[in-house]
Image (cartoon, rainbow, N blue to C red):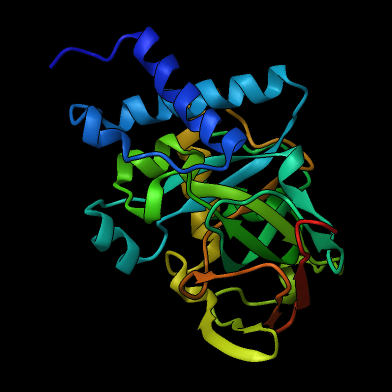
Length: 266
């Protein structure tokens, strides 16, 4: 099979960027180009990131998606995927979020904040644990530029792993102070309990997702830098959110994190 040429990669990346700009989702990329591979999808993702950086954004970390067996089975893959977190994706806790999301969902995650560079291949759990300065409770806002979330693995990877936004809690906790595998999580939307989960839902432990990420992006010439945030994957399913709603995640040993979705006119 012939490789997708650079011009086509650029055109598909442009279509995804236009979905951001117009607020109108597009049809799945694989409908038009069924020959696209996951490798092609990461090329499209990198082209988008390059454009964001040229426009003044800065890469502030990464996210890991498809880190639960159920999601991998649904997508027909045997490993997670990753996307980039840029400076414009971070929103303050308790402050109204009015970013123009298209079809947002929310997920509770523990956020790793790196104190030293982490570069694969060859990263072990011990290496990853030593590199983490502290952890924070976090809410990831996932969004899709693909109409009605009708995504294949290629579509979601090309679309920066369906990244949307991040809200970080403000109480740092040392990694040694909490057992991430056994950590319980409860997610509430406007006071209603949406779901519960534990850290073991994320590849057995969220720390395993950090190891996977470092060893996957390292051969691509990408390092996880000091100060970078890594979101390892959700402890519950993703839930839709709408303007005017408040979402709170409580994580045992880490505390709470709150995302307030304001009206677009605010």
